[in-house]
Length: 119
Image (tube, rainbow, N blue to C red; front, side, top):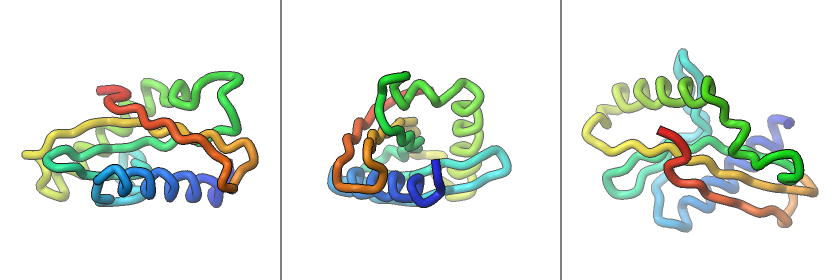
């Protein structure tokens, strides 16, 4: 997946979350452990979101591509973020947003938000 398409998917995710009442805290947050695509907050919950963009789900659902090792990197990166931002008193949740865009960057796409995708 190209960087432009990935950025488009992350922007669509952020737009969706804002409409659902979330505040976007960070996009493409990096630590020495890895990257988190979108960090959002709703009330006292910080949500760490992995965005998975695919053409379709014929081979497998997009969320299935978030491997155990990727989850571990996200968990470590989330801990780093919470320490840096003094957010240890907030609840943390890990979501996956699947975006299926059969025509690439276009208005024709499907978004599926999976809350508590992993712990």
